[in-house]
Image 1 (cartoon, rainbow over the protein chains, first blue to last red):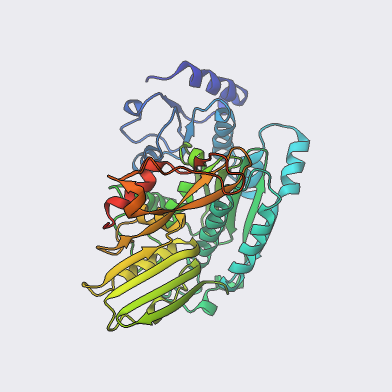
Image 2: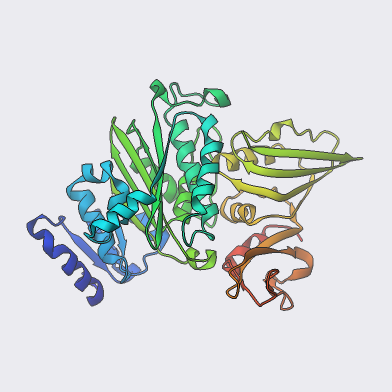
Length: 289
Length: 161
């Protein structure tokens, strides 16, 4: 297995504190040719340099990899930590994803700041969508470096909220009326945002745990085949395009599912970058299901 | 509910639609009658966002267009250009994207805005005409295009000119 010395030294430094409990394997790659060709254990962390978004999705979809981390000097350590934490203690991620995603040190002040920056909205019907989006717009005005990403953040929030509603209706209906789009059992889901110096997280948590991550990855992978997304499924809601739109806006995509109990999907959006810079960002992926 | 506002103006066999707001699953495209229309102009300038459910509605609507309908899209904002580039069938077959916006960012004053391009005038062989440059409307300094130009203009190969 080839690897870059730079990536290896970072991973060794990160993995050391976990001693015996590091994941089954950390697979280091330096180019597309080094990507594994056969299935690897789910808890493998793929660490590579500039793995394309398409390859990230392919690794997750075709080989069942749950964690793909880019070996960028400033974020590698943090992303490997996220992966290790999600593998070792998924409950910790499910109970407080914002802290897991945004905390880069053990500094208590940092955690406090992330919690202070947090805004969340409980929702259970489509009628609440526009009001929440309007409040998110107001919130983003106070987020430093968000002037280039407010449209992306709103688009992600819209997708997460809308998908949570339509995928958890009381009864599957092909074309539900506006007023009938409500979460089953009158339960609430939650949309939440927070940020640190460089990243904004937009996430959604629902109390159903119905997301099938393998299906989601299959759909996103299908959207990468060919130059364009070739078809939009007109008969059922969702055909991967929403996930692809979220993925396009993100430098990090995280999903955690406790079947029958809760689903969390988070998008990490870089702050302070113009659109043209942001498009070139590589992507990290973390799945716990 | 905010949603999409559709304002239509009909003159003889020409129909102009001014779309504004959010294109989502509630977009009432089915209320637009294309009977006895041979040229549809869509002014998309005021479309602010589109979600994946709106993409679905848009494509369903496009698929109802009569085969001989001429379609022109003007004032195409980035959110729509992105969908044209990403999703096959989003742009109606044979449609002309007459004008579209290209975002720019000014490093001098931090202003982010858009400049309207005309596909016929400002694009030469699929590339931006050399005469086209981003000048900040706020401080008049040279600005940078805030897209990856080659991939952003990809849609021009599927749009008639």
